[in-house]
Length: 151
Image (cartoon, rainbow, N blue to C red; front, side, top):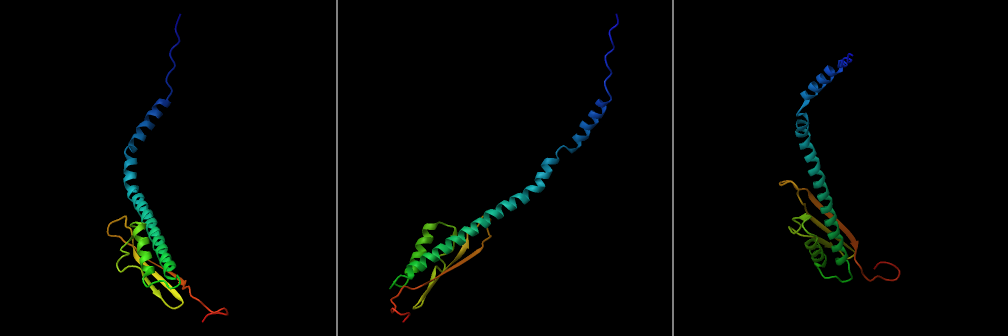
């Protein structure tokens, strides 16, 4: 009895082998692509963190200015009460706003109004890069008036 001959391998093995060899030509392409794209990814990451730090610094300055106005607008508030309150707020707030103490918070008071301004720079993620921050709050001074209107 004769055993049947083994089936001949199909011609696809040659095609498969050529595909495997052709795919091997792209070896190492992923690290090169990553090296090209990674600086852009890092730039976007640091830019977004810097933008967030700038927004937090602005919010800190505005809250300090509003706190200063609240302290200074009280009936017969002593001179400098607003600046002292803003300085205390900024000291407790941390380093989100850099350089706020030079020249420091400034409050302008008239008979009917108070305006406080806080200036500084945002905390920097990248050394040498700083963004200025200036926030102002405004309010009316508490005072006694006549029943019919303003004096």
